[in-house]
Each structure stands twice: as structure tokens, then as C-alpha cells.
Image 1 (spheres, rainbow, N blue to C red):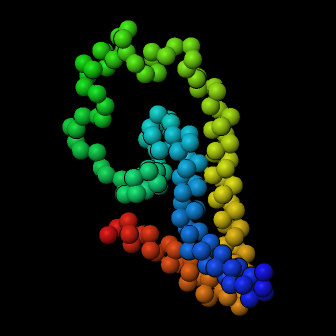
Image 2: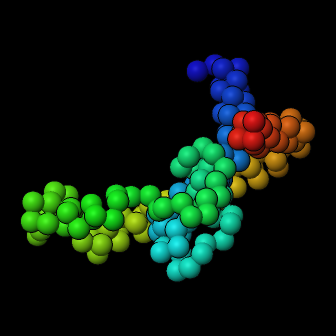
Image 3: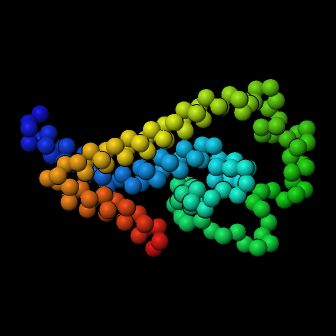
Length: 158
């Protein structure tokens, strides 16, 4: 590969990395938190902080969290349907019996995915630091990084 091609590829890699770095930071951290269901009251052990709920909503729904309507029923089947579904003819996890995987079997993968999210978060921070250490391109790099934060926020709020 020619030296000029290699330089162009490195510049493209740096620009794409800086532009998408803010999204990588958000999605890697929120994904790691969602692995343990910390955006839900049952996973957090109470009402989760608003920032976790906000990140999870953006991650899962690409939208801001909506406030729950007062008096609105919870999502799910009507109350009578739960009793019917638990009957002997029910299909789904309860009907499968012994072949169903228990929560203990998922712990290893959950740990891996949580660590993966944190490693991606830290790796992205290191990439930003390396890119900003280049004094010759620092201003351009900061502009690309800022654009990568501003564009998705504009798209989220518009």
C-alpha cells in the first residue's frame, strides 16, 4: 500500500472514530448497565437514577423516556390472561420444564457482556485521548468530536 493511501486511511479512521466516539461511549455504558437490568426497578433494587433510565431509553428506543401516565395500566396481558397462561396447556418458558435454562447459566455471559461494554467504553476514551494528543490536528479533532456529540443530540430532540 502506498504511503499516501495509508495516511488517507488513518485520517479516515481517526475522523470516523472521533465522530462516532460519543455514541460509542453512550451505547457501551448503557449496554453494560442494561445487561444487569439496572434501568428497571427490579434490577436496580428500587427506582433507578434518571440518567440510567434516559440512557436506556435512548439505547433501546432511540427516543427520550416518556413519563408514565397517571392511572395507566402496566403493559402486559390483562389480569385474567395471566391465570389462563399458567394452565397445563400453557406454552412458553413455564411449559418447557427441565430444558429451560436457569439464571445461573447466564451469569458467565452476563459478566462477559458487562465487561465488554466497560472495555469498549475505556478503549473509546483512550482513542479520544490519543487523537487529541496530536497537537497538529487537535482543533480538527475537537471539531469532529463535538460534531459527533451534537448531531445525535439534535436528531434526538428534533
